[in-house]
Length: 377
Image (tube, rainbow, N blue to C red; front, side):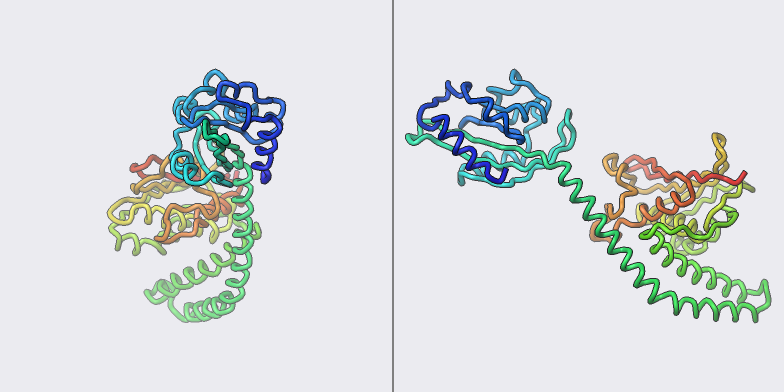
């Protein structure tokens, strides 16, 4: 395709188009030659009406000659080609330059779905200026773009792995020292005293920090932590200890919808705390202030699993973003914080527990994250 314009010149020269073909003769183009092009080809007249389209165009965009030839390009397929960037190309750029290369356009087509297209275009005129044509080759690079994005994400994940290793090496040693001192100090306090409770909370917080560092490494390297029987109610309560004050400051109400007992699950407590904390903080960011977060726990009535729900009254999630919520590095926070690893890390933890996570949301109506984790029999 890089030699497209040379190819056009050769075709035009060989067929004698520039010298002998008039508008009424365009139907006599040599289809056998033009249909060898893998790229879609459109030929427009000076009024931007389609005078020719090759086989690849019809195949790629699922249209036929009866609804294409003689039609204004913007009216193709009930107006689905009325694309602002295409208008800029045809009405603003091409009139000032005869050749356009690698002009990218993205569009959602009702029939064929999302397409990323690379357009090469050329305006040609006969020597006398009696007529002009626009030759437009359209290369479908949708899969190429997806592959590039996948490769970019993979490279970012690799960088996270290296970063995690550095963090673990730099922080684990001092954290181990802090944990040891806290254990010593707590052993010298009377159990049940206020100081003992405070030291225990500090000890849990430091342990949580240490596990969070390990979770980063596990996220990059897919290493499972040690598992043991877990009371998910205790996990939820201990996680809320870390966040409750921050939520109260932001006028966010916490609702605990817990039964007296739920089934025991096999898991890693610190990882589950990390997952639940991410969901709670995600809900806090969605609310900003003055709202409610509900943590709901229950046994499933459908299968042998425990259900964990985190529901908020935040701004909700647009429908087009729902399929990407657990994709690494996908974020809607922009420059306001967030690199898009929180929810993907949560999914990684739930996957490690042989569970599932999904989200239900409507824009403006909050969001609900629903986790199912197999219970012990």
